[in-house]
Image 1: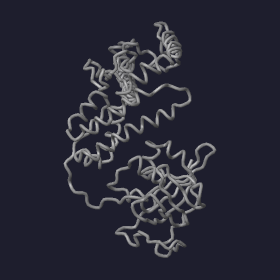
Image 2 (image 1 turned 60 degrees about the vertical axis):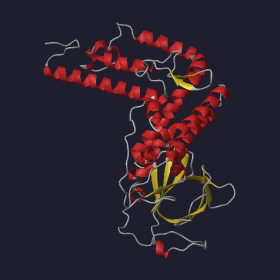
Image 3 (image 1 turned 45 degrees about the vertical axis):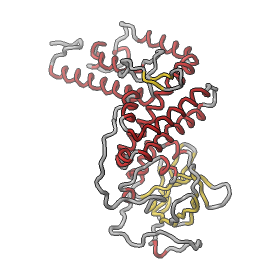
Image 4 (image 1 turned 90 degrees about the vertical axis):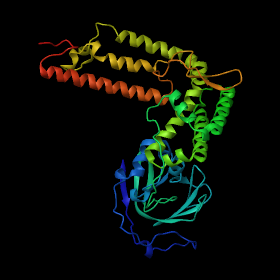
Length: 384
């Protein structure tokens, strides 16, 4: 729930601050910024959809005006630069997870440490966002705390980052570029170190997640530093997001054997057996859609209507001893080159598979309903 509290909005030129420091306030702009609703702000929408955990763990969040972000890529570090908690040392100061510090003195926010340049920005309005019993103070600001919107963007040579996740083809994509050779060697070394040292300990899942995130984030940053073509491509927000997903997917493909086959599968075996028994009960032929209280005419659909959806969902069943990658005797990650491209091994692949399954179910229902309206069906019970 969002509750607007105040909208100071005085002119920046008439504001004063007790801090005698250089500022970077822009006193005049070509066009005045039109106030926008929080839910319409591109930064806020992206933050809540991609980095909601960072948002919910914050006490103060700065939301730059959408127009001030044109041409900027919203990376995790950029997001963290705008999400803060109270400083344990100084009143009125706030510290981000990446170590950057700001001070707030209405109606101004000033950067204190960790930034490339000193900057003071104007608060356009202040709101509260309520999540359960927690309330988060949100400042709508004229500009970001770091970075500038690109007024004129030169054309660059770019490529299209694959949008469909598959750990094998994603790894092949990275191997296409000679500039990626060294970063990939470093990545494989980090993966091998994780494989050699990882032991599942109940209650330490968050630590494991952070360690894996560190591995793929470092690889992602290193590749962007070494590969100009990918770096230029990732200046486009959508391509950047796809590339970050791609690197994460490659790492999770590398770790599938260690995390799942060697660790979690045996631990979750009893839960899997219980779920399997439930599925077998519900899969009996005498249990029709009518018994699930599904309304007519969808209740008349047969199992054969959903064969495509069933086949798609079966791709998530990777309970196999043959992962997409394995470690040879020299500790080098190799591709098993088996026909596994249709299987969904990693979390991102499984999510995409579940979404595709739901889409196929929706399509099947729509087609059946259309056939009913036309007076006949080819794959259901109804006929005329």
